[in-house]
Image (cartoon, rainbow, N blue to C red):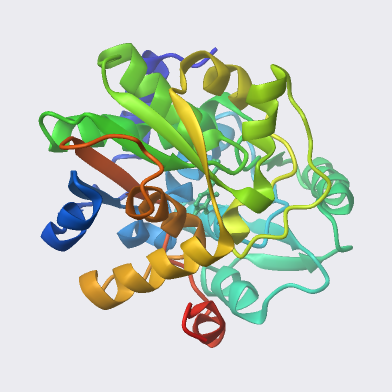
Length: 317
Ligand SMILES: *Cc1c(COP(=O)(O)O)cnc(C)c1O
């Protein structure tokens, strides 16, 4: 089990690579939500998402342990993060992406000197390919969430929130595979358990919500949400027990609410966030949190939006 000690260690390990991102505030959103609203700005993080925290912690350890190559099966923010840190450390990386990869995501990986390998359409096909590449090249597969070093790296977001802001009452976190929230839960509940941590999922990707209801890891058939960072079909075997132990509540958000929150933040705060981030703002805006007059921190987990797709996300379209 990951403990807060692992997260302090991760913070030391990654401090030379990551940005300590600011906490933004908005008086307009505060009055709409009936709470004092703050935003942990991981969309301003290196590579545009928090994923670089876990990836750096894990890749640095792999290199210390002798790996001369790394790979990941992800076309999204995790793939970019692994390509970025491998390039910084001078280790070659191959990112295994689906045949129908979005060209802008492929370009981002290439911009960090990551090699691209196209393979199949499902993660079930990509992961064995990544494992074979790792075995051939004396390297390691860097998993996106279900790994102690990844969880500890993501947990550094929680330590920063506690350092940067006094009197936090509630922290709101998006849930995909659960790496981010299980790290933040470990940091916050081991240091200041009176702080409430609320997880957010799209209605269309409610695998962790379902799993909590059932009391065991439960998978969903498809996760057809606009929030592409949250399209997992089930929580991880390491992340789920942490969520189950500590989370105060999980709330669900509709696709329309995600779009409205994304465009609200863009218009009013001039911040470009991706749909996976917008779920936390939507939870506050559409009154899913059931709190009043509190200091609420929404984690803005990333800002990587394909500008060609931005028009389709407009709620007024
Ligand atoms: C990966 C990701 C998430 C979800 O994180 P998990 O650790 O998989 O729960 C949320 N937002 C963004 C922007 C992401 O890239």
